[in-house]
Length: 249
Image (cartoon, rainbow, N blue to C red; front, side, top):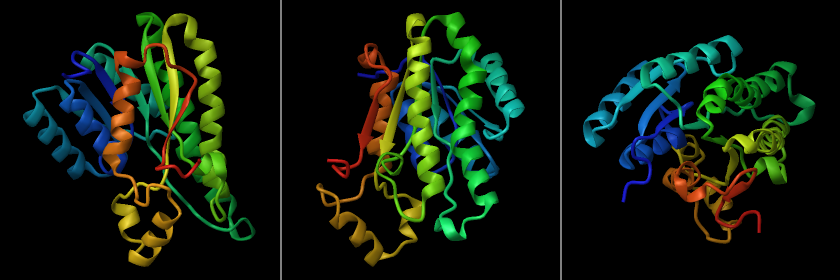
């Protein structure tokens, strides 16, 4: 059974990794997909063509800077013009600029806050009028287990991801009376193109500390997004769903 038929989702940062897996799972479940990307025009065009032909849904990529307030508003306006509505917003765009605090520059701090945290404010704010007019919607914000437990060398990243949790819980309280839900997914160690560069020894060090003794797959996160975007979760808001193999146990 397809769980997202006739719904439209806007997914930021969907040209690779977790974002791409979410887009694929959503399309497979009958959802029309609008997605944003920063630079990878070729990857975005390939994803657009692949999903629309394979799953017979409407798919369109938009080049946009989620960290920019006006660009985010223009993105939402373009999506509504093209698709007529937005049922699900998935704030997935994010980067890392790891460093110990004693070596961290102001630029490394500010870039992380702008891309990881301010982007969530930008897109949520830009989508607000659409969601309130529709009197329904699901906002899914991508945090991280690092935002809950911290990690040496990632104070900027951890702070940005912790901020997403507080922001989302507040938005859930603000918008609940209009049937607009806001939840958080906190992935753990998910094996993507970036983690593949760590090498076998580093991967084993990570997975040895995970109760399930393996890294997660982008599809594990995408499946959680299916649940929070579908009508199966209409009484779920303000929650943090950890997809981490037990790292936070």
